[in-house]
Image (cartoon, rainbow, N blue to C red; front, side, top):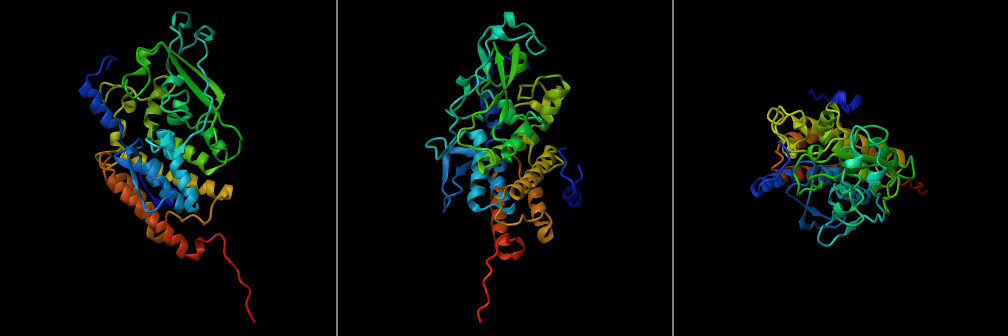
Length: 384
């Protein structure tokens, strides 16, 4: 993929059988899962508190958390709103921050239930509901990691928030809600019945091979106190936008293979048609593009995130400063994002945190020190 500053200023492109896994294999997979756009070996800190104190019980993502907070400053948000966007972007995965004694939590109180299997009509993805056991093994409220976590990776909206297509009923619905174009969020709930395994981190398998029936319904999502058009809602959308890029190859592979949705699965090797959906795919998202070509997609994701931050800040009135262009000060911001995606590997996230911190400090200094970025100026009358 060619990266060209003028091009991006003109246009942002959007562009193994299931079975019991040994304890050693499970631990290896677990370690690999905590990479890239998922949680990394970076601890949560409350961005509204200084000096910074980290919570070692909660890991976060260098993209969803660190970079989103820094880019929000560059896009012109106040420090308070940037912190809220940063926190709620990470909350889509974490559910609460920090995990041990939450400072931030969702407040949703209702979740959709799977329709009774007796009411499910026969279709391609549920070919024999009459012989399918009623046990809900994907999307059940019992699988949600924490109370009120409507974005749960294992709740009914797991696909909607974490593997969304860029289409009106998925990612674009989230965008419309985040920008305040609609008051309520309509989301696609996905349920699986009678699976050999429940869909959770503890069962790293292939749910398409272990689950005989899938059903989707469209629901009004209970988002609790996260209201349309707010910085927290925008943070939720940014997370799903990032996941649309991060899981982009998997979504394409799932569509090409006629699957009802995309999800992480256990696969046999590079020739497998769903190899892009392997549970360990995130470990290749950062680093030298010659060795880790998926880092090109990560770089594109950072540009897309910044584009949407600029659009939100300018269309909703939350901006306190004009956004800093990618080309300002000899392409500083553009080059920082390129370095962020292409220098350190997924297993080494600390350089990305330092880079995000540097970018934040630069953005604060740049916008405060240059009147061209000031949206509000105090005008005093001349004294006689």
